[in-house]
Amino acid sequence: MKSGRCLAVAATILLLSGCRIELYSGLPEEDANQMLAILMQHHIDADKQRGEGGITLRVEQAQFINAVELLRLNGFPHRKYTTAEMMFPPNQLVVSPSEEHQKILYLKEQRIGGMLSQMEGVVQADVAIASRSAGDEEAGAPVSVAVFIKYSPQVNMETFRMQIRNLVEKAIPGLQYDHISILMQPASYRMAASAPSVHQDPQGRAIHWLIQHYRLLMIPLALTLIAMIYLAAGKWRDRRR
Image 1: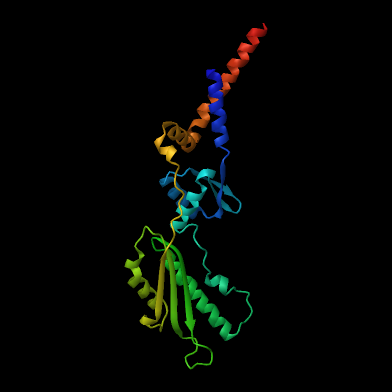
Image 2: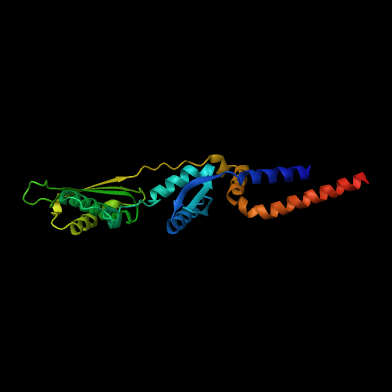
């Protein structure tokens, strides 16, 4: 009877080890390490695997929703902004002045958005620069700038409104301070609630602990299982004699 119970527990743990699903793939080393650290700090069991295209993060299927939301509220995975090398490749053909100007404006938007996204608590940052048309005397000069920031509800981003406005003004020469519009919106909090039985019922807490720490039990459990099989085989041979 005891052997049957041990085998049942072993089978359960081995089944749990196959419940990991892919969270993100193609990640750079730095982003993957930071994301993994955030998940571990919030007791979400995850691991990383190296591949040709980058690093893949995996997480328990039951914790997938909370893992995605937790990383989203921390601004991960980082958005890839356009660089000058991407906008003006060395082998590019000559473009018109108006097209070149539009590319420069877009590059400025990307750079400012990239700077804002580095702020603590920023989930998403977008910048749009409006300039005068080609027929105006001051063609190309910036007229106004719109900034949209989605931020984590855990951070009071309103306290940084003045600093954000100053940063945008200094980043765009000729822009008037009162022509900067900033909209900040808190991100919705969509973390899944944990089942009450996991925290209140002793059996639920035990199952939750097994799910969280099954990796630590894999080696001793495998050795125990092998030993039990060996002993069972020995008894079977003795009976046949």
